[in-house]
Image (cartoon, rainbow, N blue to C red; front, side):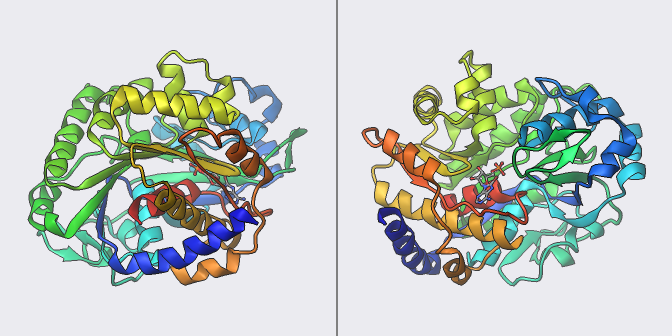
Length: 432
Ligand code: 8BR
């Protein structure tokens, strides 16, 4: 009863709050997604999946075998995983075997921008690179969704293109609990993402954006940075990720000086040096970060912490490690999400407000899971009756005596879509 009351209160609160929503800007990762609902026989035709199951997934995809190992890992554990394809031959091999699937808009920044603008935030600006017609036309019609074109004008993404063609594709293989491939049964609905993105893997900030964004900066009070998972440690031209982060760090410093509140979204970042740069160089500068249990456990591994319990979402271990991260890096807030509950550790004393934000985000995630589209704030009423997770209630009970803010979430029994849920959760909670 108690938690249901929190959700109902949050819904009313968010409807008021959205009226005063600040301008929000997002970068640096929008892409064309190819969505494929996994069919057992498609994989069985190619290989016996049992030969590819291993404890650790590959770091990147350089061969078809790496692709199958990544898929087998994700499918057999029911775990979300994203790996970059680093060979054009494999890109062609996947295209031949699976096609592009259902083409849709993807990329963390784009997913978040759509979620926020649809939700009702008044002014959402998305950085898009490259400004390709095939990509920008996937953005929904919406008056509150804008980008900056190469002439420095703020326009709807559809009017901003200056080149054509699909320059990158991220294949999303969605699978369902109970599906069986080569005798392996999938334990949980989730997805495996294989990404081909040679054009944007440097997370380049275009000259046009660097010059023009500062002109409009007073309109934007929040900035969400994402897309680190498509970066490499060393690029084919020899440039290193440390060098790439020099540019990102100086951008973050520049907007921080203008008083913009900054959130960095983690993702399935396979390269340790990319994670190290975020934790050591970005976290100390920013206000907030969002991550799931796998993402948190990888950071823990990097820092020499035993991580098995973290990956299994043991609430006490998660809480302890989040507190450690806050203290060590100086970041002000971390929003952790897992199936059944969210935990926030933060320097902010206003716990009640944080709980309102989290509950609103959880309702939005439930809506997206149930209907496979992002909700408008008024849509949230339709998911109000979805039951609240017992695992989540236990986690809240376990951490009752700590300063963690824990929200047991509503879990949709048969979700239509799991991709983009983390993006929805983190962005709505941060922007409210
Ligand atoms: P990522 O996108 O970062 O993996 O986050 C996914 C989040 O979506 C999970 O942490 C969980 O909170 C939420 N989620 C998933 Br997965 N399935 C869900 C479901 N069926 N109902 C509600 N939320 C779900």
